[in-house]
Image (tube, rainbow, N blue to C red; front, side, top):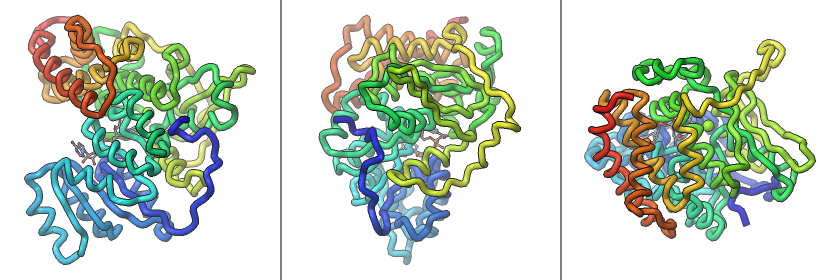
Length: 407
Ligand code: NAD
Ligand code: MG
């Protein structure tokens, strides 16, 4: 039994839906709050969370009259409490408060924390057996199959919010799971799609942060430039839909209009299209099993004129190849892939390593992990968190030699 519903056959719930948004102050959080703002009478906000942006969180909490808010940064408690004085809004700080926010009763939860830090809170929501719109791909990549197994066991409903996976989710409902032969996720190719390898190697932070089509948080924007994001998404697709690596193809599509396609046994390929605006897949998750009005610009294919596609270049973008390697290796290798990347991206932002060294650090950490005989199945959240922690340490210890080495 899959935790991702394969048909829109869930009965429509009448009345006001309660919602919680983890990562409410981020880019996905912002798009989610925008949709909630546009449909006031339909939703009531239970809880909102952020890492350290107290000001942004308090503004949202007051606007939406949230019942509970939490910030991960424990040093901000007084600031948060004072800012909410007299509102009746409860608040908390630290990881436990983020988990509390996820545990409180809400019919629908958006998981939009950035990075593996979102795993424990997402699992707290999973254990309630609720409906979760999952944007936080790293938590899925970190926990692997275990996340989806736990969701299925708890009766949680996982709605893929990432645009490519949401496209697959929509396309999948036109056939049966055993009729699926392949999925294709598209990639814009990022800002370095046409760059030579030597130029990619030395790309600056400002260049990596200039995404051609999507406006997103910093980490995912850098991941898009390295194509690590697509690598994470290949693993995400494998986990969400129980696919083998051979059943997942990546296609570079610079216009970002076709987001994902599903091929069925009769060779029909069903695609989902839309202008690149995250509010469309989020609206699909928010309205599901119905459709609600979305605010994105209407797709005008005549004015776009041409949609183009190319095969990904695994040599210039080794991060994508490494994702397939991690998926084939299994046994915590995807956790290592994600953990090493989080360390590498932070080091690149801090100007400690060159852009090209991001994938090299991930590869060195994965190889070191396998050589040390650390591969083992993940049976619990604690297993995943331990592998994540140890892989971060290994990546941090490999960092100086990777930083010193020329390409
Ligand atoms: P962002 O950096 O803009 O926002 C992240 C949110 O998480 C913020 O509210 C931040 O306060 C919170 N946060 C960060 N670290 C935290 C921690 N340690 N504990 C608790 N809260 C923490 O990121 P984003 O672009 O909105 O991305 C969020 C997630 O959605 C990521 O997993 C990303 O890969 C995924 N995603 C994003 C997009 C996009 O268009 N932005 C598209 C698809 C998937
Ligand atoms: Mg995506």
